[in-house]
Length: 64
Figure 1: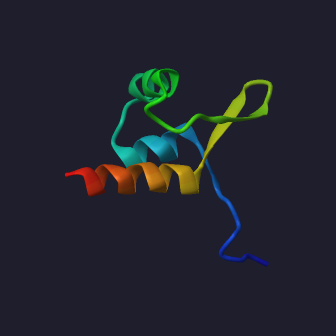
Figure 2: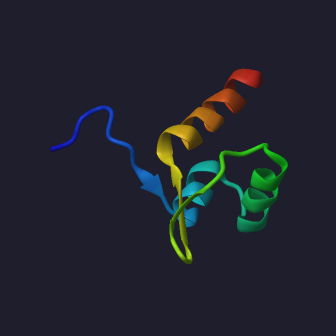
């Protein structure tokens, strides 16, 4: 059962596809605080919250 409040976790590939950014750029922007940080879900596994990525994209669109 899914609701509107269910949060989806995105892989790096999904984040890259949604944003058009490359791997190195994503991590550099996270380090600078210019991009939503990843969520550690395992010792060697991270994901990004879809709502945070969508918000970041929308904020870029609103700035233009």
